[in-house]
Length: 102
Image (cartoon, rainbow, N blue to C red; front, side, top):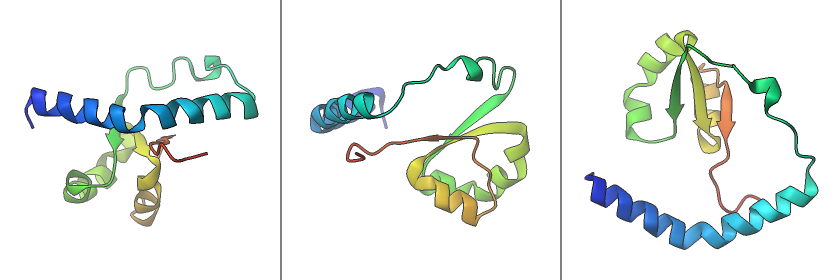
């Protein structure tokens, strides 16, 4: 994709989901105790991070990810966790990527 296509895709996504993201952030902000990020300060310094999500590149690089997982911190989209577990990949951090989570 070109930079302009990526930009347009981002604008479209934001236009579609922005209100839902804001509503969910407000909802979660009142229901859960907010905790400091301080305990996480410095984690991963000097290490590479690999961000993964389901899709063609994940499937194509599955064996490489398995082989190199001990050399990187793996950050995975929530929908990718089961695929990782099923394939013996340990995820270090999970990012919730669904605007409908409440």
